[in-house]
Amino acid sequence: MQKQHAIPITLFFLAGAMFAGVSGNESFNLLPKHFALQGIHPAVTGFIMSFTGIGGIVVLPFLAFFVDHFRAKDILTVAVLLNILVPLIYFLPVPAAELYAVPRALQGSLFGIMMVGFNAALGHSLPPGNRSRGFALFGLMGQAGGLTAIAVGELIFDAGGLSRLYLFSFLLFSCSLLLVRLFPEEKHQQHATDPRLRDFVEVLGRRSMLPPLFWIFILGSGFGTMLAFLPDLVLERNLAMVRPFYIAYPITVAAIRISLSQYFDRFPLYRVLLLPVAMIPLSMLAVNAAQSIVLLAVAGICYGIAHGVMFPTLMGHLMDRSPVHFRGRMSLVFNLMFSFGLFVAGNIGRLFIDESVQGAFTGMAVISSLGLLLLLGVWLRAACTETGDRV
Image (cartoon, rainbow, N blue to C red; front, side, top):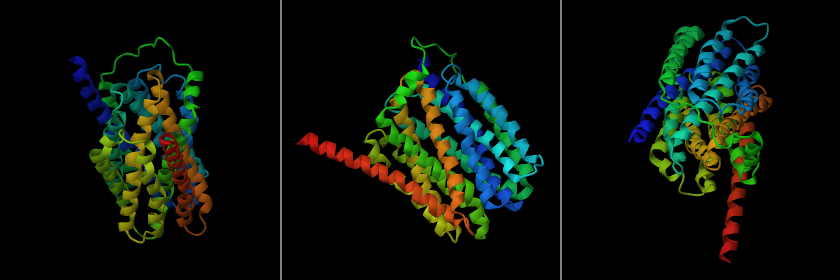
């Protein structure tokens, strides 16, 4: 009976900590608006924001050496404390705006570490065969945090600038830290077979793992494009606010996960992902055409469909194909590929900027379409295999 009650209590603290932590971190997604008001060029802003991804790429591989050896709450405690301190760097004068990429890289790495901690803890709490739904519903707290960060954070930023936004994030991180410390996690138990990096690489190197990893990268590149360039496009077209996208996106995610997540584990991966993968380039094209906040909301719905299905489905797919003592590292790989997508979007996207930031969305829409082509190839191969089996 104790075990039956342990999981809901654990999820309560995890969900609350994730809501506050994600909200605190994602409030700094408004940095491009701050930079634009400071007169920083969109290409420079894209460079700075791309380091959201490079931070994860650099730090997360080192986390692989100890993520499965320590309690998630201890990893989360360190990450949240550093999240409080790092944004103070934005208030320091710098000789070149590009140097703001350093704190942004640190924030990206800390967000990745937080997600690894949350997902590793959740991976140990959820029963096999139901992980996609579990990650889907748990992830709603992250989406709610992201919605709060932008919907409330933009109002606070417009009223008091970056200093008020920092105080907002400070309160949220403080709440997250309290809930993390209250999180009732058992002490780490050593497995009979200690996780070896060589074994983990062997699991990861299976041919069947490569398409899911690429789709995670595509998902990250979609969000990275919005993160780096949407605020500049909004100001360029006098649309005044980014909120329509950042409100429509998590609401769509929530609606999909509540109503459809029970089906994510019942069908082949390629069937579940077909529409969501197509929504990523479509969301960018919607932003590209936006002359009003209505199309920004449409873009948010499109990306929300992609994120709402792909994130939990692919995370559950990786976890189900990973030994229990590799789940922390598998969560790390997920976040690493997502971070790589963020980094590529910010740096490749800015190459398409000429006189307007619009080119970044066109170029990245073409690149993200490669995920759909790969999915169609996997589907065709599966169909041919099924036909051969019947013959």
